Image (cartoon, rainbow, N blue to C red; front, side):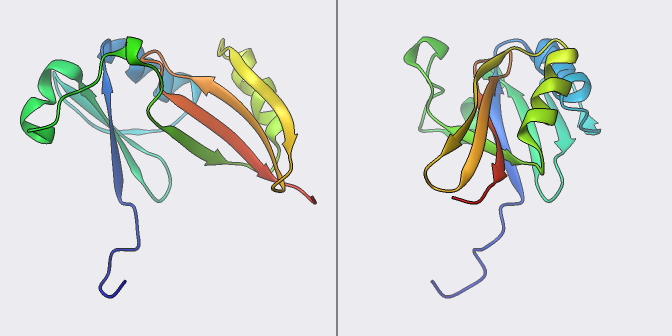
Length: 131
């Protein structure tokens, strides 16, 4: 594709409980908050900004689409790369984060585990391994 559509600068996820989500990203993942107001919070996730937005504030941003209810199930999986999945999982567990799956070696050359944030968003913790 010609042009400059190559870097993901920000990802916005929708949250039912903004305070719980803010705490998860600040305390459990240790990401610095770079902006906050009554309906959102933005975190520095390395090369990407992760923006949390209350579900009831998302309408104008994504119209004519709507926010799917949490009960609809996962619609996306986001990945965080690390050098040591097992150590990352141990650190997350020590911070009170439940490990939903893994760590497991995958046939495509990754060792992965998953965690869920307070709104049910699925985060994969991933490490390259020799396949």
